[in-house]
Image 1 (cartoon, rainbow, N blue to C red):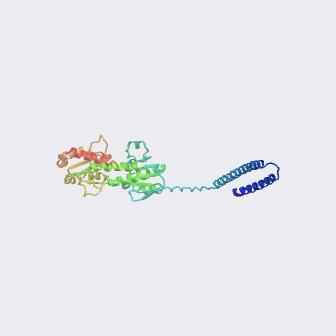
Image 2: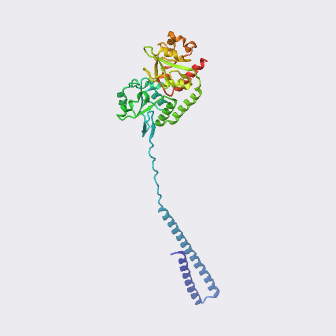
Image 3: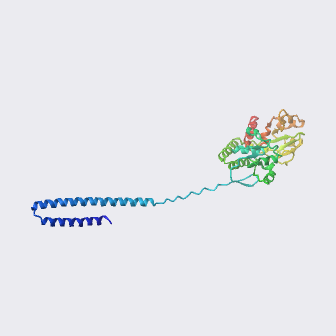
Length: 363
């Protein structure tokens, strides 16, 4: 039922009541004035009752309407669609031997078994837990356990430490890829035959370690400083080292040591020679060959630590060499064995800057 029905019902009842009252009054003996006053009074009472009933009906209807709204609200259903978790991204890099390596997570237990590997790892923002004996930079690595020589490391010690990643030098240590890979270890190779090799190695290691910002900063610093240090010197050079038997070997342009002179813009007089002797990237030179080369500058490297005499002094004592242009002009530069020979890698910029400074001082 609605409001209209109730109102019609009340109106009908009111008419019936009034009709009965009028009939009763018509039969009464009271004066007409009194009759009219009673009719008015009764009418007012009826109207009042009708208004009250209407209010009740309206109120009831309002309550009913509110109840309907509440009922609808309780029936609302909220559907929440779960957000799918992104699949973990694999780390994929290509090493200096052209091998593709992938990692599901960032390695945390790292072994570096060459100075090149150690210095690239630290330049990229990583840290090593195991090193070779020749890795001495940065200074903090000196407290790490070592696996012996980089040329003949203890494979048993490396395997026993179960590293997540082993970083090697590609040219001299490529044989360890198969040996260590056979027992399920990850091996990543780096090299430093060119500036691009150094830059690429650092960036790849930064990708593996999740330290791209540190690696990029390091490579940008190297490139910026090299741009300043590079010159077109044009002077000819021989870079010499001796063995215990006092044989002399010259660095080839393809060697890391030769690369340093090339960056400066020097002409390497050993360019036509072939690799020979105990030092990779060096060629044996007889005194006669050195006299024929007659370079403008001689750079010497002394493998033995002090107080062993420096090769830069010994070479001047060889009688035939007195006529060499470099000896006559005093253009002999003794360089650090670590920077120029034993630790190819990020510190190439320090070697280049040292050589440039030495050449400038002779002009």
